[in-house]
Length: 353
Image 1 (cartoon, rainbow, N blue to C red):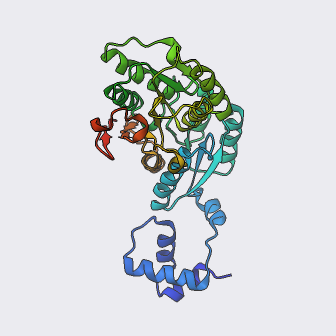
Image 2: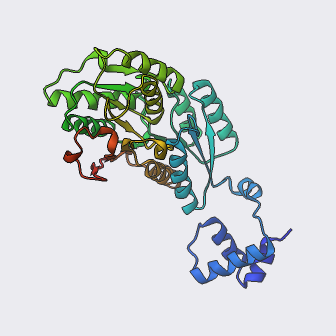
Image 3: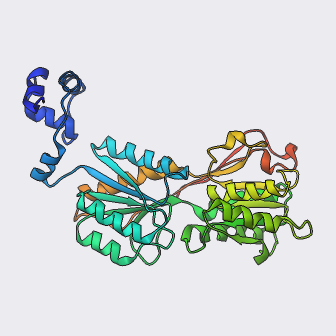
């Protein structure tokens, strides 16, 4: 097995220069970096990060906990976070909580035992207790929350502008002439789901409409449950809404399944808008109008904030709560009158922090 000294000799540089290239701790010229990278590749050198971490108490590893990597929104967040971590010489360990607070607590303990230097987390549906955060803080492990921001806990976070994004989607349906608009949500125990409901209600009130409890359909993230709920509520033509807005990808897939089971189609029978691009969107005809969250950017910016916290321990200035803009991609599912909407129309929002 090659040693770091052999890499240095092969590249014609010092051992320190090789270390700087590997860790990214000190800037190195592009010429020297290329020579070191070539030597590492030729010698098939693999740094012993375990030994280095024992010596320096640094692992250059971050952890990220998400509810479910099979939901397409979360891999994009992970990819953004990994890019941000790699740019600073860090690796990323990703794990699933499966929406279980108990499993989430176990994963936090596991990541601590692996000596990660910081943790990114999308909190489980029932939330993250203050005691979990306090234990991490006392252990000197910074945390940044993504997407879902826990209540009654002061913590750095990055998410989308939930209220404004939901208003944008509802405003669009109203502009298309829909008036009896139902909203399909995930659990309203989640703050971001409640804020999306708030945006929907504010949009209706601005249009002179009174939000109806009958049109607020609270569900969960299980497609079969959502399909059953939507099928039941869409089956009666007398009470059926004329449009649906869904607050996340899983609710959209469940709602579409329930709609199809009733023999209904968009936009002929119902206008349709959802948060989050559906990974199987190309299979839908007509295509689905989508409120697109900047998932990659959420992960990337969160990793930047986390790495700043790691590198500036003891010198922080307040808590960062960054809210990024969503965009509306208007497609056929919401176009009651195609003449009112230009093809491939995209409506941006402004970010705030």
